[in-house]
Amino acid sequence: MADSFQTQTFEITTGDREVALDITERCADFLTEVAAGRDGLLNVFVPHATAGVAVLETGAGSDQDLLALLRELVPADDRWRHRHGSPGHGRDHVIPGLVAPHATLPVIGGRMALGIWQSVVLIDTNGDNPHRTLRLSFLG
Image 1 (tube, rainbow, N blue to C red):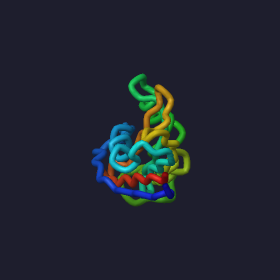
Image 2 (cartoon, rainbow, N blue to C red):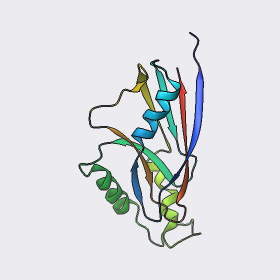
Image 3 (tube, one colour):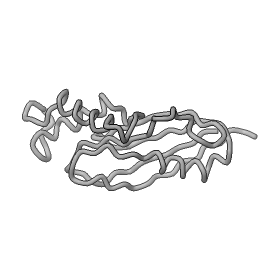
C-alpha cells in the first residue's frame, strides 16, 4: 500500500490560566480513525505563537514541574519587548522557543509508540487566548 497523509484539526479550550493539558487520548482517537493498524508518523502541531507540545510524564507532577520551570526561566514581568495583552504576556511568545509547537511520534500498528509513562501534552501559558487549534497529521 502506498503512503498516505491524513490530517484533522480540533478546537480545544485551555482556559484563562497556564495549563499542561494531556492530549494523548485525542491523538490516540485520531489514529484509530486514520491509521488502521499501519505504521507511520504522527505529527502534533499547535499553530499558535504562544503554545507548545511536550512529550512527558503526567500525573506524578512532571507536567506541573515543567510549568513551574517555565515560570522561573521565563517570568511574566515587564522585561519583554512584545507588550500587547496582559502584563508579562511577552513571555508567552518566547515559550514556543523552549517548548516547540510540534512533536512527531512513531506509530506502530496504528498506535503511538510512547514509553510507558509518556504522554502528549499541550503547553499553553497564555491566559489571554483560551481557544486553541490542534492539528494532527498521520503519514503512513
